[in-house]
Amino acid sequence: MADRTSTDDRQLPDGLVSEMAGLSSLAVSADFFILVEALKLRFGSSLEAVLLYGSCLRSPEIGDGVVDFYAVVNNYRSAYPERYLGYLNAWLPPNVFYLEASQQEKKFRAKYAVVSVADFEQGTGHWFHPYLWARFAQPTRLLYARDEVIRKRICRALAQAVITFLKSTLPTLNAPMVDAETIWTNGLTQTYAAELRPERAGRARQLAQFNPDEYVRLTRQAAPALEAELEVLADGNYRCLISAADHRRSLRHWRLRRWQGKVLSVLRLTKAAFTFHDSINYAAWKIERHTGVRVEVTPLLRRHPVLWGFKVSWQLLRRGLMR
Image (tube, rainbow, N blue to C red; front, side):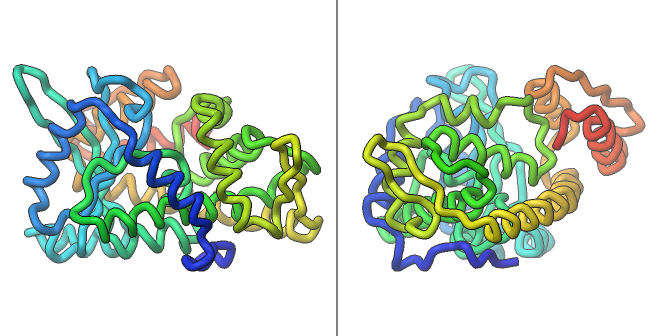
């Protein structure tokens, strides 16, 4: 479902594109590139770009963590020797896989999602659900791009994600004056609620406060495309220009996104059970890491990962640990 709040690509502020390009090119540990090389071997000529995002982005080294990548490919047919994987990826992007790479007795682990360039651009600009534009409105690192043309397309898609994020979440605010931290905390809270995410309360504010200057700059650079939503004030804050009708309409949209997100999350988890090696152990580790709740993986449920996923999701929903 397309979102009419997205901005025409020609209207993207140049300053925002430059800001996202600069953030995406910041240096990271050399360890990440060991995994990037493994992805290049995995996908060969079909690989167009590799993006790093998630919690490892904010760590000086990988350590025992599991790195989050997006592998952007030219098309799904050439990306997979197995035709069914291409069909699954086209039906409900992305496909998610597990990767390990070693160097000098060090083992590095990653979870990588596969999406085509076309779906990446659509997902950051036109999807109704925030699955892609919420992730990539936040700062990421572009660790590999096939050429300068792809680099520019990816950076424009990242800038578009910021605009889509802000245009979609600003109308939910019910305050006349806001700062960048409030804008992003509210936006991340809305997008987290639209997925089955095992996140602690306050996670959205924690992210907005981690590198506040980045979110201040992104908001200021995006402002020229948000003239109908925000007025920039002299003190660096913003006046919301959202009408009561737009506020009510936005709340209805987000209720729909939350229901849609639950369905999509279950479908993606089900699909990952067939594409992600040792998906149950990874999911149990992820849940414990984010919520502090230890999830039992019984032999029976290990043989039936889909049933395990439904059972655990239901338990966490009842306990209020997934929203």
